[in-house]
Length: 372
Image (cartoon, rainbow, N blue to C red; front, top):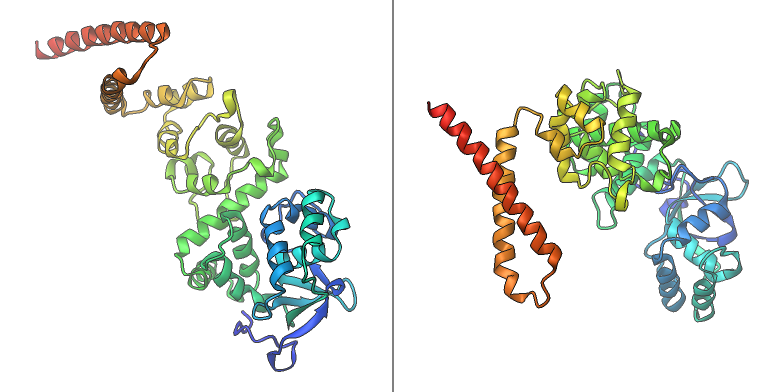
């Protein structure tokens, strides 16, 4: 890996220089940018950033107080356009200043942008920057600031950052790379490996057109849920993977990935997914290794019902009974607060009474049979 002492070798003695706004360009390799947009199109990137409500707030802050020179923008030379620089760190600040100077470039939120610009007394035409010879020289700082620092990125951006940084490492051994990356971000190597494996799965979902799932797009994929799923060994095996630490995805079963994607991210009735909440991954982890349970879930039965077909039905049955008892006790505690009882509630309680009576009859019968 190149020296990452964060001393910008492209700037004399690491001094801050001021560069005109028109020579500063958004970084297409910014880990926060979604793959669904044209990252090379400056107008498209600006519009995507403007969808973040905090850009307007940032415009107001810079417009009132000016740009704080103690936070220079970190750039590298843009080889695609002579005399220009790519902003590796500071893209949001660049976006805010561009809009302050020229609010007409906004394609969305135009009223808010024009109001923020019109009420601003400070509209810097040049920004303080530190110029680096190579983007990799800045990556270590990005890890400190956005992966472990106070301005943390979301998990997907962290994974993209780690993937970029991984490409700068000289060592060929993945285990050594994960350890190096883990040290840089102050985490564990297994967490780094799982993030990168999750990113590889995410990219597979994208490359396969989200498996044709209706209305599913990159914005609908909860990356943290995907990586959490990789912490369950049975789900990893269901995908055909030997472990959750290999981003090359050896043995990946795309049909299984399609099913998992559907279960976790496809919205069905009332906007819910087949999985529901992330805490239900434990149940799914049990279901995928039992043929009857998996067949039941695939047929459309609820996950809770499918879980009863795993080897833990007695435990699940007991927990269900206890939860029902607890819920009824809570209802009894609050019944005096209900001013207008519903006939539907009365009917449901009658059904509960019948279900409880039937279940009790079955359980007593089985207990007596076992005792004899």
